[in-house]
Structures are given as C-alpha cells and as structure tokens.
Amino acid sequence: GLPARVRIHEVGARDGLQNEKATVPTEVKAEFVRRLAEAGLTTIEATSFVHPKWVPQLADAEQLFPQIADLPADLPVLVPNERGLDRALALGARRVAVFASATESFAKANLNRTVDEALAMFEPVVGRAKAEGVHVRGYLSMCFGDPWEGAVPIPQVTKVCRALLDMGCDELSLGDTIGVATPGHVRALLTELDVPVEKVGVHFHDTYGQALANTYAALQHGVTTVDASAGGLGGCPYAKSATGNLATEDLVWMLQGLGIDTGVDLGRLVATSVWMAEHLGRPSPSRTVRALSHQ
Ligand code: HMG
Ligand code: MG
Image (cartoon, rainbow, N blue to C red; front, side):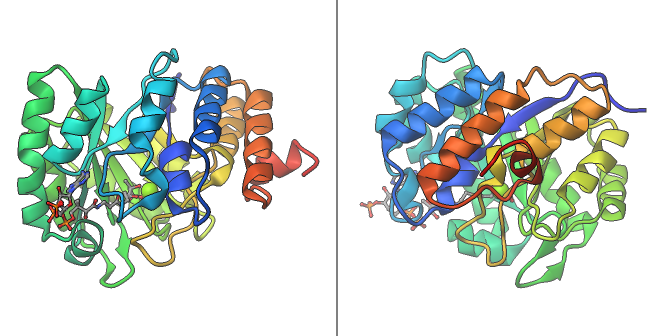
C-alpha cells in the first residue's frame, strides 16, 4: 500500500541553488524561501555552512538565515564539520544535516576526506547537535552509482547508513546524486537496508528521468519523506553529470493523483518556480511547471 501522507523535504534553496554560477542576491533567496513556505512547504532546506570557497553561491548563509528564521517552516541547513555547526548554532538553527558518501571517490571530491575520515568529522557534530536538542539529518550520497566508481554495492551503502544512525542521526536521506537509479535498484536497497522505514528519506536527482518512478518504488516500500527541488533546480558542483533534483511540482502532481496529502498549493508553487526561472534566465526543466504555466 501507499502512505496517506508524504512529507516533502524541499531542497531548492540549497541543492538547487548551490550549482548556479551567477550569484543569486541574498534578497532573492530570502523571497524564494518565503514563497516556498507560503506555498505550504513545511521543511525547507535553506543553505549550507560550508567553506565559502567550496560553494561560493551559499557564502551568504550568515546574511540569509536571519531573514528567513521567523517563517513557519523547519529550515534545516548543511554543516560538514564543527566549524559549520558553530556558525549554524550561532544563528539559532534547530535542524542540521551532515553529508556522508557511500564511495571513496565522492568523499574525496566533496569533503576532501576518506569515507571514514568524513564520518569521524561528523561524529562530534552530531554529538554536540543532539546535546543541544537540534535535529540531525544524515545525507548519504552515491547510494546507487558513482561517476568514478560505477555501480555502488549495496553493503557499502548499508554500512555507512548504520554508522550515521549509530552516531545519533535522527533520519537518513538516501541520495542518488547522479540520477542513475531505477525502481528495481531502489527496491533492492530499501529491502536490504535494515533500518526503520520512518527514519529513511529518499533524494533522487532526475538525470535519467527516473526520479518519479524511483519515488513511487520508495513509497510502495513505506517511505514517507521525499526530497525534491522546486522547479527541478539543481545539481552538485562536486559530482560530474548530476542534474537537478526531482521537481517538487512533478512530485506534488503525482501525489495529488494518488490521493496522498502534502499540504502544498501547486498553483502557488508553480508561480514561485516561474518567478525563479525568470530570475535565473532559463525555463524550469519541470514538466509540471511547463504544463501549468506559459513559460
Ligand atoms: P578542507 O579544505 O579539508 O578544510 O575542506 P579544512 O578542514 O582543512 O579547513 C581549511 C580551512 O577552511 C580552515 O581555514 C577552516 O577554518 C575553514 P584556515 O584555518 O585555513 O583559515 N573551514 C570553514 N570555513 C567556514 N565554514 C566551514 C569551514 N570548514 C573549514 N564549515 C570541507 C573540508 C568539509 C570544509 C570542504 O570540503 C567543504 O566545505 N565541502 C562542502 C562541499 C559541499 O557543500 N558540497 C555540496 C553539498 S553535498 C550534496 O550536494 C549532495 C546531497 O545533495 C545529496 C546527494 O545528492 O547525494 C546532500
Ligand atoms: Mg543532491
């Protein structure tokens, strides 16, 4: 059976924008997040407290966060290390996310660490966050395929999932960073992953047009947290061939058709993505945004 309700973890302002070459003004980001909240999204990943040289687009996290902090939505932020956690806590962040990798190649490219060194870096971050009552998400990238290593063996994924949960992460997000997963692979991973399904979210990029089918496979497996990016914005600067995430509008359209409640006003969300597409100077790749707008 399918779940009665799905929680959408909106990543457009973080995963979506982190890859944009041209700097998006802080005020535009703040308005984007505000409009996403007005469209009914309740979990809106806002920015990252990473090294500004690694992700220049999000270097304004200190300026942005106070402008959106009062919105009626959870606003998780990415923190790779204790320095990032310090920055986030100083601004009053109540939800943070660490981001691990199932593969050595991506751990090196994204974090300048081995898989184990990255986990060691996260351990005190998670420990301190939990001691402060802060919710911690553990991302796991390259759960299906890796641009350098090819198909990723499932035991390699389950091992890092276990490590993230053991150190205290409240939830996991299983990332198909480069969008190569297919529904059979999703089913196989979720079957082998020996973790309570309420703790598992899915994070699909849409490179091969499989994100929606993969999401459906995850829902059938009992997953109720789905990551998506308004307008299908996105990609990861440290993974070649990563395109945007599953578009939130495509997800909402499917869930509405299945009678699954999301609390999202699709019209308002499409208007927001059209507005953002105008700002970025190119149309949204989301099929649903195109169908419901005149862009
Ligand atoms: P490093 O070069 O090894 O850093 O990078 P370090 O620990 O050696 O520190 C070097 C300098 O950076 C020091 O300054 C630190 O203070 C400073 P110095 O003493 O030389 O003046 N520094 C910082 N400054 C500000 N904020 C910080 C911070 N940390 C250190 N937090 C590091 C290691 C982790 C910092 C770097 O690799 C990094 O920032 N990586 C972030 C990469 C990233 O954000 N990638 C995109 C997000 S992941 C993703 O998109 C995938 C996902 O969507 C899921 C999926 O699709 O799979 C989540
Ligand atoms: Mg991603």
